[in-house]
Image (cartoon, rainbow, N blue to C red; front, side):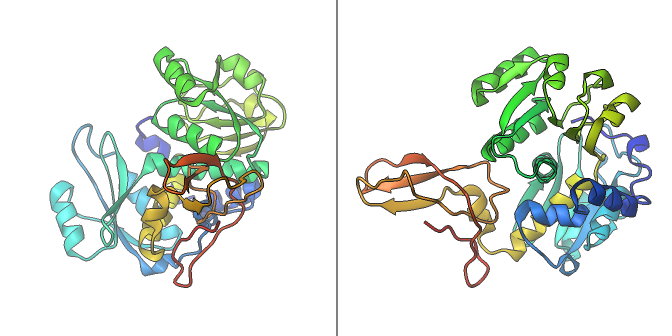
Length: 336
């Protein structure tokens, strides 16, 4: 993703109420609501303390970045402040204070560290989740929907995986030949040029810094666009029915909720990292079986469930996530 500049984020702390209003108009959810929707949870974020630690390595601190991250975290309910010290000293001070979540970023990664559970949430993954979920809400679901993804870098790769997992038919625009070939080979997607791709699409996830000429955009399009810098001209804005875009807010909100969820929801780490397993009798007819997964079907890129037949090698079957399940202690479970 493009490195943010002070000019891209200078007004973030002062416009969060406006951002909530814009997002509600677009998809019926504010920043906090969208982040909770990603995981189908409702958490008391006021129970969590957070610190933003500025990191000076590489190209150094982006002016206003830590203040913006902190403002977003406070806006959705966390007790958050910016650490006065930087780098290793700042991290040591943050951990020593007993804080629950530490936000920090260098040239390569922007992460939230849950100090209680020793779990890290990467902004790339959180941004993909937030914007894919926003697009899903705007479209009324992704199953069998045609979606154009512009950009197949780190954020694009993860987004393609998520969209396909939710049933979308994905087409990709990627000008880098190597990336385009890798995406095509890995995901089986069709690769198109910018003009052809945009002109033939009404649902777009833009994760690229490229400019998208308004003349390419169809009237009534729905666009979810974390790509920076801003990609659209006035003509494109007028043709787009729903545009979901901000430089930092959706990604940080999703990071914060995801990090807090590691503490609030027992077993979440297992849910995110382990396949659902079902023991079935040899010869079982799976054609009419419905597999129910949780926390929400919205996170996992995994839409398949490994099944075991009397100790034989596990096979993979298509699973249809239809509901979410919780154990008596709110732990995650799967129902077969």
